[in-house]
Length: 457
Image (cartoon, rainbow, N blue to C red; front, side, top):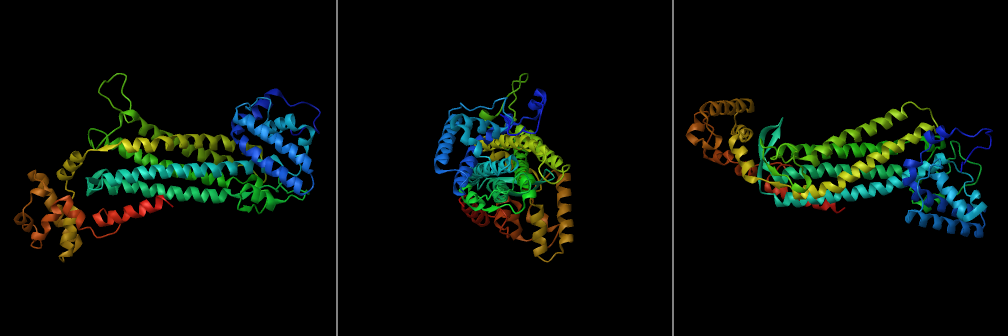
């Protein structure tokens, strides 16, 4: 059933019809097409283009189409050009010729934009819920490991001591920003294009205010040319997905590195790992590697949409049909990752003794020693040089920082006194940290409270 064709003498080429059909991927919008049709029918009755009897008949037919969808009797058929054609054809089966009144005053251009917006609103709600679930797992793991020490890194070199709990909260705040990004996307998608026609509106007195309320939109799109062709809300959504995925990729990269024998900071859950077909000893971090790998596809989907949009003129163009291929593919990938990530995360086990060994092995208290001297009145650049000499000599003499005595420290600077000794251990360093974003115990507890409050908003 074509929704056009009156001005054509010849039938469309079969091969071109298959080439141009979008039913294979836009079928997932069937539910939203039914929702919009239901609201549209009610609106037409309000402006006297449908009688009450006709409205009842169409509404009943839409209920039957809905039931077909739920019971999987409605499927993407090759003979349908798109989801609108499929629903309209099924509606005709149940309602007869009265269904032909329904499309008055509207175009598929505005219809598809409306339905994708409705769909994305629901997807965003689901993603936000799943991000919150992951955040809760992070909070539980951070609380569990609040007092376990680990080295923090810059350039993958040991930098300063901290705790596993504070380190894990760094992931929480990245996801919190992702959550805010998705909520912004929902606001941007919550504008209604209906009433825009194909590009320049309609002479039918469409009650757009009623449609807006009925479909739960917060506002009506301001400009008909823009409304039917703009895909900024999809770009924002894909940007939010890419941003989220980069953060999940970072977490995955950390866990891949930390699970290697060179670090051996954590134990991978066997339920989410694989072995080698050749080497019996292997336990591979495949889940995290796959998350890392899928990041390329998600970023590429965003790039593909931007490239699609950069070459089309104002107004609707058929190129825009391709936007959903990238959109739906990315939604499926991100959804599957968010489904699994909390379960994998909760099964990670940190190895306290191995992390402490690396802290003791390195010169991880160097910054605190230099800052100690600065607080005693030594210019910081001079203090930096003094501590640098201590580290150089430690390497030459094969000694560790915690082996240094007060007498040895005084040989480097008379400003070292007995109160420097706590700074040779991670416990002493953490308790003397001064800033609220640091892993100092009271600062961590305050941050944890803020995080628990944020996840429940």
